[in-house]
Picture 1: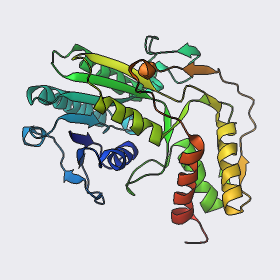
Picture 2 (picture 1 turned 120 degrees about the vertical axis):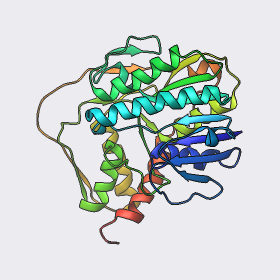
Picture 3 (picture 1 turned 180 degrees about the vertical axis):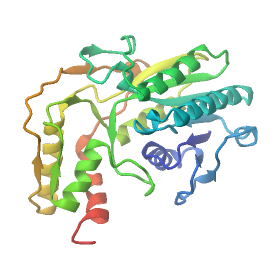
Picture 4 (picture 1 turned 90 degrees about the vertical axis):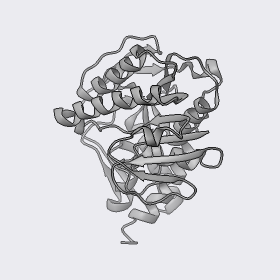
Length: 301
């Protein structure tokens, strides 16, 4: 298959390229220049026109503004317009499949109870608004295209592309700071529950969907670990690994507020189509730790 991946400077795009390049012909598109990936065609382009799409079978649309950029109405509206045009052009160009990376944030900032793909959404910020609007467009657009919206939870892992803007993600931030400052300081008390999923699980799920033959409709799937952890618990697990592997004494510093948060669980229907990924936090964290030790260890700077 010829697979076009947008958002070339992002965490998901780089890891997905690394995962699928041995079995697919991969083209990655980025607005800015990124370091080349072996056996992957890299294009720098602000727009993806029919000349690029004509040779492709599948589009994986990982490009998108982050939470901060979504607050800028100009950036937000430009992204929405360009993504809708891309979907329309994909349909007209004979693309077989369009996979959009959405977010579980569409269920609200602090979900409660048991959630699945049929649960009501709760749009509380511009980031989730953008994700939901593209999902809705994929649902409504008349097309013979296989369309998938993947609601991804809190992913983390080492970046293949050095330029990836991913270090504000809580596990990523914590691992980097552990090597820079020998401590991890949060502004929160760490009591919030989150569903963390390794990037290797995310890209496995995407590749599973690339490989299957689906129907020419729009399907929504959650891409989650299926379990929630308190932020402080997952960070303590990470820090214990760092201390053991690197003989360090990193400490976690939390705020002392007494705020509590609801627990929830997000289920995925990917298992119904045999596309559920394996989740291995230890393996992903070990590789992330090695990456940060090599690139951010203050003893190496």
